Image (tube, rainbow, N blue to C red; front, side):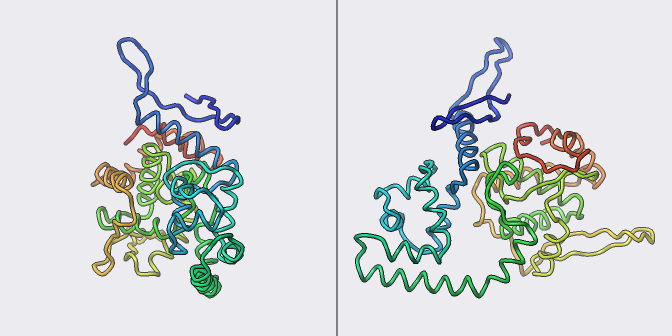
Length: 321
C-alpha cells in the first residue's frame, strides 16, 4: 500500500510494509519492518532536499582521513553530530547542505581555513592534506568524466535506489555473477536488476545506484553496453563472443578472471546476501527463461510500453524471487 507519512512537517507518499494475519486479517509490523518504513520516509525527505545519505556522509569524511569529531569541529556542528549523521540521523537542511559543500575539496579548503578553534598545527596539516586531494582530483578529472558518461553521475533518488551511482561497486557485481554463473549479456542485466531491487526491498537502498529501464528483453541498466565494455576493457572480467548458427548477432558471455577476484569487502552483509540469493535463484536458468521471469514482474509490465525508467518502489512488488 502507498501511504502518506509526515516528517518534519512535510508529507511524503511511501510504500507501507506490513504483515497480514491470515486468520484475523489484521495488519501489523515488527521492529524490522517499522525501521524499513521509517527509512523509506527519511530517504524521500533526503532526496527532495538534496541531503546527503549516511554512506555519502562517511565517504566524505574518509576522503579527508578525519575523525567524526574533527569533521564536526570543522563544520561547526555539535561534537557528536557528524557521527550521528553517519549512523543514520537525518541532518537539518543547513547542516546537510554544509556537508554537501564539504564534499568538494576546493570548498573544504575554505571551511578548514575559516573554522574557529582549530589547533594551528592541525589546521596546517589538514590544509596540506586537502590541497593534495585537490591536485589529485584535478589530475583525475578526465577519468571521472569518462565514468560519469558511462553510468551518469546523479544524486540519490527513487530511480537510483537512494544511492549515488557507483561504477566500482557495479563492476564488483559483474565480477561476482561472472564467477558464479558465466552469464550472457542479456541475463546479466536481469541479475543486476534483481540484486539491486532485492537489496532495496530489504534495506531501503540499492547496491549500485544504477538506473534501470524496461525494454522488450526485460530490465536493463542505464547504458549497459558502455558499462560492460568499460568493465571488460579494464580486464575486470573476460567476455567471449560467440556466433550462433552463422548469425550476425553474436552473444557475449562473461567469465571471471583468475587474476581478478571478487572484492567482498566492498559490500555489506545484506548486499552480499542479496547477491547470493539472486545467484542461487537463477543458477542453471536459460536466457529465455530469465527473460520470461523478468516479464512477470510489475516493474517491467508497467514500464515496458514507454521504455520507462523503473522506480525502485517496484522492489516491493517483486514476485519471482
